[in-house]
Image (cartoon, rainbow, N blue to C red; front, side):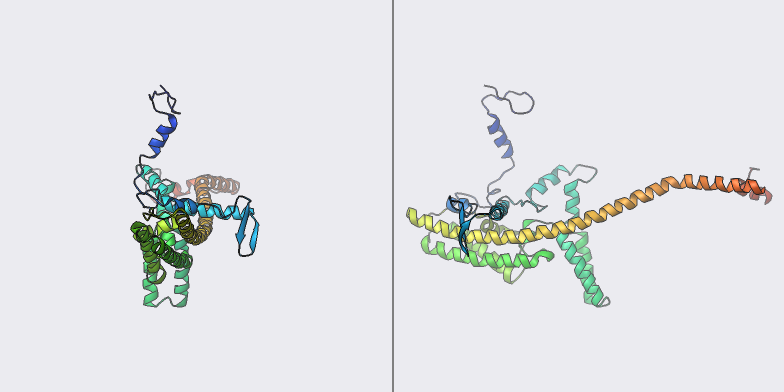
Length: 358
């Protein structure tokens, strides 16, 4: 049997279009590439629960003020948190320029002569960091421009401008971004507390689920280091990604249906709080990045206007000079003076130079 694949009419015997598309899309995927690096069987109750909305079938939701009907803001907040959860699973957050999709575009632009949008974004790096460095540089130089410590810091900031950091999820949430460090530290403190609570619940109810406990403990240690001691690196964020994405290995303990359901609901609530904290940090960075991007676009627009102004002036300069020469010659004709265009040749001839004699 022959099916149309949406492109040129090519027979693919026994292959349906959706199966072929699914196969093509899955060619570049590896184990864990869409599950925050976690491989093997997953804890399905937690994976589904972290993206489930908080209102019931009656379209009502409970908050600190009691039970009420849902509003458009509740739906919008849920969609934003879901984007953060799914972004952590696939390492590509909507609104964050550098991620898995950016790397694919960079590979496609590698052979071009002119840089594409992804290459230009790679050269600019994190605009929020750049704005924070510029503000810190101006403040430091204003306090004491001759201080050696200030000059050394200014040199370091200049080197970072030449090799800017990339705006990835790890950069945003690990505390490495200078302009978003406070939000990242707050997220790490929340992740430390919530993963610690989840570890206690799983260790008490399902002590034999070693893989689940290991994933939670690695995330807890990473959040502890980032919130207290130092900025996390890429490996540190990789340890936190399962907690943000709500992806945990499956339980292996023989629990009753009710105990498994209650344990999954409790751990899901903890990871939902982590995802909400990560969403706050990411949305704050996106806001700062939009402001920095608007300033850069305005500056580039001004530079483009100046370039057009100078180009127009350069093109019009010969015509202006010719018009001026004709105007001066017309004035000299009325007074009987020599035309302006012949002055140099006449002066050279009178002095015995090359002039017209050559």
